[in-house]
Image 1: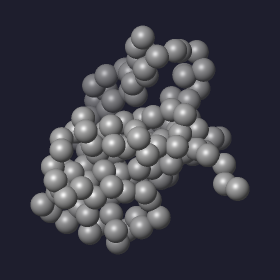
Image 2: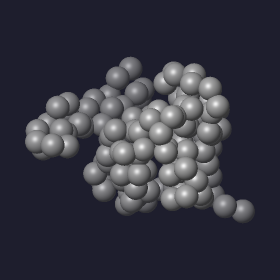
Image 3: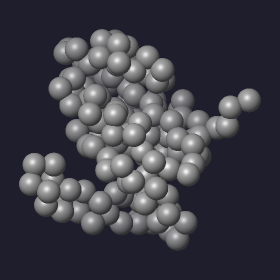
Image 4: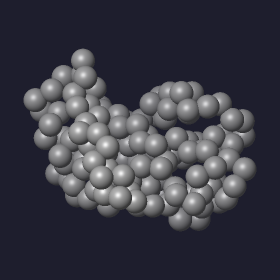
Length: 135
């Protein structure tokens, strides 16, 4: 019997075909000492997003909506099917550094509540946000 993931990465997507593959690859490429899963909700995209998900990531659990329900409902739908004890909501235009999940995991051992990741501008490399723990 496969081990359940400890963390579910939930990616809501709308018309993000140009950036979605990089986002998913950055999630799948994480080096961790725990199990995690990647889930995708395509919010009735009008571009090639659904085809990209089916062709390049058929092994991932995905919800392909026929109606645009918005980010909040998309995220809630992902939370309902997530098997992880913890959830990471990742925007489709966000790309994780290879050790981002491991760093977040180590930080979570000392914090209760909601954690946010450090954010770096992809173009300039400038730090935008340090990330933090929230109650």
